[in-house]
Image (cartoon, rainbow, N blue to C red; front, side):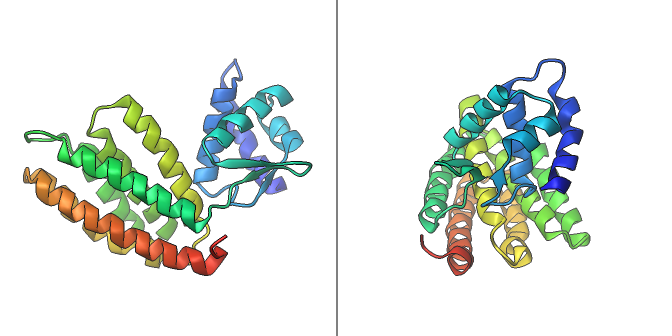
Length: 230
């Protein structure tokens, strides 16, 4: 935890002159997504508050916000912990992804589509593979799907899926073979991108639906082996 807090202190500049709970929660959300605080980690109020230079009340409000987003859990007389998802949680995340992401693609309307963000996420994934950075590939994969959702042009949908993708990262950090988990889907991202570039949103939706079902099956298999069906 000492090493983590030293790194967290570097984020103090991100708070600006006014340290709000929302800004603190943004920093902690990013750190959790990066695996800086792995699932099951107890978060120290004194340590994190001191590293960020914020009051206990501000930090507690940030914890409350992240608990509402299901990234943290408060355990009576023990403290606040980064949440460890159950298999049912993972399955529910994928149900939400299927409902939202497929609906976004289905509702795109007539081409051409604004695909620069998707193309950059694919390129990010290719760079990660070239560097054998498998966790980086997982991040690029999340970026791809975030950009896909952004095609809807809806701030509410973006906000909903930001929380869903942050929860998904909790599952990624438990799986012990990130290459096996992420590598097969870079090619599928490219296929979806090519379909959209060709104006084929129906084909893109079909590719996406199969992709998400296959991804769920693989991650549940790995996740169940690691944490069990709690």
